[in-house]
Each structure stands twice: as C-alpha cells, then as structure tokens.
Length: 314
Image (cartoon, rainbow, N blue to C red):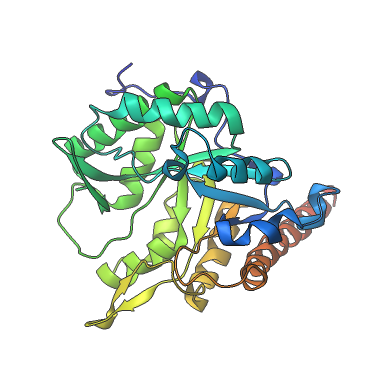
C-alpha cells in the first residue's frame, strides 16, 4: 500500500492515535525506579491523575528475561506508550518489515495506548547511524517520510504519531517544518507528537518563531506532547542548545507547554529524562508540574465554555 498522493484515514487502523482524557502527564520508564513505581497506589486512575509511562520500543526487542518481566509488572497497573527510535521513517525502508514485526509482537502483548516514532532519518544503504537526523524539507523527502510512515503503520496494524526533530542548523527548504509535518500526517493517516523541548531548541538554534510554529499545527492531529531538559553546547554555550534529556525542564519550555495546551486542548504530556536520572520522587515532582498545567488548562476551558453558554442563553 503506497501513500503517493492519496490521503489515508485513520479508519484504516483499529486503534486511534488520540488518547485524550485517558492520560494525564507521564514519565519515561527507568529500571532504577521499578520498586517506586510498583508501590504506587492503583485503586483508581484518578489516584495518580492518569499517570502513564513511556518506553523506547527497541529496548524491548528481546526474547525474554527480566527486562520484559519488568515491563509486564508495570503494565499491570499503568498505561504505557511505545516510542520508537530506530524506524528511520524518512529513508531506507528496506528493513522496515523486519523492524515492524518486532514492534507488532510487543504491541500485541502490551497493548500500548500510544505508539510513536520520529520524523527523521537514521539509516542509509543498510547502515545505521544511531542518531535522529532531520530531513531536508523537500517534496522528495516528504514522499519518503509518507512512504516510511505507511510501511510502519501497515506493519504494526495501527496508526502512529510522528515527532518533530531538534534542529541544530538552518537550511534551505521547500516548506516550513509545520507544513512538512502536517502534510505528512494528512497524507499518511498518522498523528503528530509535538516535542516542545525540540521546538524550543530549534527556535534558539535556527531563529524560528516557536509560537507561530504551534499555531500552524491543527489541534486534531496532535496526540501527545513531550517536554524535556536541554544543555548548552560545551564550546558554543547558549548559542547552540543540545537536546540532552539530562536536565530539568527549563522555564521557557514550561511556558511554551502552557501555550501549546491553550492551542491543542487536553493532550497527554510526557516528561522525558534519559541521563543524570534523579530520584523517582524528584521526577514525580516535575511530572506534577506538567499535570498542573493540564488541570489548569481544563479549568480555563470549562470556565470559557460556561461563559459562552451564558452569552448564548442571553
């Protein structure tokens, strides 16, 4: 099934990309926090404000052992999402079938509420570069991304979300990144994962307007939001920000999250942390800030809706 210039509906796949109110704010799942996670109360979803956990899918490409047992134990009490880092949706799709076969096996067992990948390339001529590199925003690259998403979704039998990359250099393109991603989503039937930290990094590194970027994204396409910490380049300092996931979320990223929720409405928010891992208690404090933003946005929308209803009645 080739995407070409056709628009694919998410009805092609049995599970929708949008989790909506089923999820609140979530955390990256780390093995060192297993005991803390399993000791959380699970009487009802509201106890932890619909807490969920996200894993990098490829970390579980194993036949058995403690890693899978660990994930099974967490899945008994919490929703999980799969976030792929090895799909290379933008290029070299020859090995996609073998890759998605492993992803599908995990999906069949764990039934993740969301599945996502990156709108990037990381393979060429069968060689894997272990990096998530932005695509040139050309018509050819767009078609390659659409074909990659189509291969991935067809392989796993459900729709996915694709994530905007971190950009470290500006380059001449046929279209802006929001236009590129929206077109890819509409023509492949996938949704979008908006990484607010990546967007902030891109805005500082390349000079794009982050808020204007968000305003170009249709809310109905957005199924998840990521936030994370970043670090200045060791040599260039604040003039080049690095997507490290090794620090707490910075204040301007929190502000951009607030603006994104104002535009998109209730959207599951994940706090990512992959290095300099703090205690689970510290991560839960940061996660609670994200949950507070979600609840604040919900209150504001309810107030606005009530006000509009009064105006209509009058």
